[in-house]
Every structure is written in C-alpha cells, then in structure tokens.
Image (cartoon, rainbow, N blue to C red; front, side, top):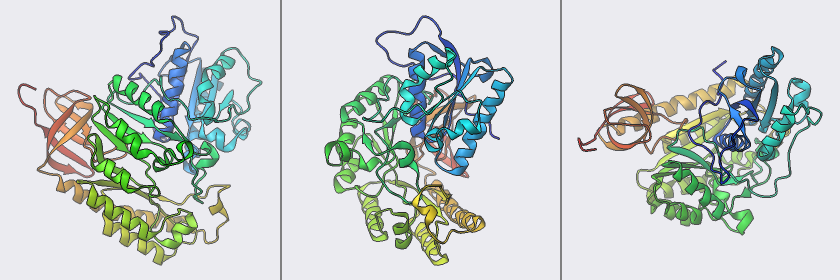
Length: 470
C-alpha cells in the first residue's frame, strides 16, 4: 500500500476575528483522500478544528484521535478508504490513538453499515456534517460514543469554504463554486453522496477568492461537480461567465484554471469570456466519457457526437494555445467493438493534449447496474490500455512541440540545489506533468520565464531565464 496521505504542516492559518485559541482541547491527525473537492472539505474541517482549539499533529500515534476524510466514488476508492480506516483502527486497538472519526463520501454511500464492518470507528460524519466536525470531536473527547450514527445535517445552502486551513502549497488553491450534481448519468453515484446541485452565491465565491489571494494564492483551480451548471438553481440561469469576469478582476492573481466543465451549458458567452480574459488560462477540463451516440445515450449524458465536435471546434478556433483535458470510460455495458473503435478514432483525430481513461466500474444502486451487456474486466482493461497507449504518443508530441519556447512556470517545490519543479499553464496540479527547472534565484511560489529544452516522458526540462537584477 502507498504511504498514507497524512496531513502534516499546513501552509496557511484560518482567518478569524477572535484570534487563535490559547489552549489545546486535544490533538488529532488527519488523512485526506479523494478528489480536489474533497480536499476543500478537508481544509475546511482543519480550519474549524483549529479555530476551536484542537491541535493538528502529523503522526497518528501522537494523536488523541484520527479523522479520515474518505472517497466513495468507485469501488477501488472505497476499498482504499476502508484500508486506511482499518490501519487507523489497528492503531487504536494497539492503544496508540484513542479515537477514530470517519468523514466524507464513504459514510454517505454506505451509512451506518460502515460501523458494523469496522466497529473501532467512534463516529461517522457525512459530507454536509463537515462544518460540525468540532462538535463531533467534542463528543469523542468527552467520551460520548452512543451517538455513532451518521451525522448529516440537511444541506439547505451552499457550504461556506472560508477560514480554511490549507494543505496545498501556499501559491495555489482549489476554489469550489458549487456542491452536488443534478446530472443523472447512469454510471455515477455522486448525486447519492453529494446531493442535488447547490450554487455558492457569487458574493461568497468572490469573498473566498479574495481571502485565498490575500493568503498568497497565485493560481485558483475552479472545481465543482458540474462547473458549467453554475447559477442555474440559484439564479434561474447559468452564470459561470459572469462569475469568471468578476474573478478576472482580482489583483494579485495570476492564473484561473477551469475544471469539470460539462459540455452542456458551454455557450458563446462563456467561450468569449475565457478567450478575452486576463487571468483565465487556456486550459479546459471537459469530461466527455464517450463519443458514440448510443453509448452517450445509455450513459444519459444528454449530448451527442455532433454537438461535442461542434463545441470542440469552436473552442479550438476561439481560444489561442488551448490545452484540452478530458476523460473517457471504456467497457460501459453494451459497448461493442465498433463503438469502442469509434472512440479510439475520435481520440486520434482530436488529439487531446491531456487525457485520462477509466474502466467502467459497476456501482451498486446506479441505473447502469441494471443494463444488459456488462463486459469482462479484461476487455475493459485492454481497451483502456489501448487508449492510453495512443494518448501517450499524443502527449509526447505535444511536449516535444514546446521545446525551444519560453513559457511561464509556476514553481511548486525545490527538488535539490538549483533544481526546481513547477508547472506551465498546460499542467493542472497533481494531475498533469511537471517542468524541472534549473537555475538560481528561484523560490517556491515564483512565476518565472523558463526556456523549455527537453522532454522526459510526460515531464519537461527547462532553464530559468532570469536577469541578473531579478
């Protein structure tokens, strides 16, 4: 098993008018799993606990209790989450920590059965119970273990993600603009875990963005379950373009990166806003999942091949230097060799600069579970491997095309003396490749011009072009 993603020293402190507590109510360790949206929830829980006087430690064996914020998206994610929980449960049985709280999507997915399966768990907290994590911790520290059922207040409004204790590097952050999803994709259980789409009001998003920039953030990564749906439930119309125009005015911000953009509601206003902005970078993440019309209909994606191709063409024509990221699913129930072949030809034709492929995961309780034509695992995996092999060469060719150019690189970490790791606009954090930069007078968080001189698989190699006066 890979090393646990245990949270160590945070990069910022949560904002509060009251100041920091003068005492510690108890110590805790924190394990965060899953997607960037879950990471935002983790950071909010960390901030809430910090403001309430709890002390974060990096070693679970030094903690009064451990919190595991879980992922429940697909079976492999659930198994990973359970493995981490069992590891923490073993520490509790050995007397090395006193309590165990499990939070996030897995409790939402399986409910109280999680405690039946792993009885060492003291409390479980649903996605929308995260703002009350301090109350749950108080119960645990106070020895109250009777109320072990899922703590899940009804979500009536968008969650306020301000006053986070961030664990990303100080210079970039994730900004969640909505919660939940109204899509009815037949393969997906996210609405069962995250609820219906709830838009975070524009004023609240802007307040959070300004707080993050004041904390040193230079890159905002916009995330949601369905980013292009933003505003429809709250304002009666999609307002992503209007929100982006406001975000684009925030001084001190260098990059705004857009993630999880469904093709539906991607209108001309949004394209023009992206193309004409100062800070929105030409990197768009559009999860397409398939291209064959029959497969798209069975997935209930509410978009067809012609509409998708029209959108991609318009994006390429309108936004200079555009980098497109997408994801596909192989082996969806009923996928024929011909339908898979159509997808493969489409991938070769469009040449997405960035792409991920997942094999179909049968999710209990989803409509796809009842579809006919479920395929063997080896067929799903072989198709996935073929697509990724095709994509590898496309990504390598794109990397080669950048050699000889000078690109702005945001420095993420120091690797060794005079060697740094960073990213261009074409690389989302923890998803895409890195640029290894040699040079002096470089620091983490700098945005510097770099001459790209080589490619190493998915990564690039460059030399910092800094004047002596810089």
